[in-house]
Image (tube, rainbow, N blue to C red):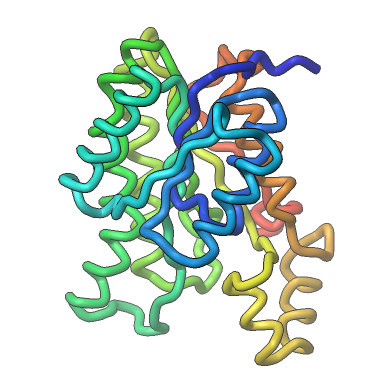
Length: 257
């Protein structure tokens, strides 16, 4: 199936590893031009180098940016304008699920998680909305199934991801003729260095039992599966889809009803 993504200009935040890196890679495989963004880490530069080696410098650009900081996003916006002029697709993928078990975390902890998971999405949307309006493009937020149901995940994280859903739906309604706006809500995804990878190393039996008892398909999702869903939502094959939340969780949310 031709997804109609050849030479589309795509910005993916949080793209140094995991879901973000997989989404960027899938766009490149579809012929798009991709700008990967991260705060900066060894894995970010390794990802940049591997993408350029496989797809070429004309397809890949990269920029270090703190998406919780509006000024840093302005610098990123100017970088995009200088290299591409406009952007067609923005994937807001910044997130941090590492929190505490308190039912109501203290202000400092709450603000940290809120900034990483909601404010980063809000600032990214606000910064790039003018460009997306100009290109009649697509904005995709990466949220979580913890935004939809209470699974025992950290309260601050779940609340911030739920706010992303509310933001996306309200924006989608008001911008329906200009910019398509959707959300991908992943379930439990396993990848090297991710939160589940760390939990498996700490207590493999407990993790195995948890997945078997909560996920009907009895396994983790992969970053490639999340990327396939994300790229479809941003493609020409999904051009009548806006204001939607696509859950990719192996049936986990089905079991709570």
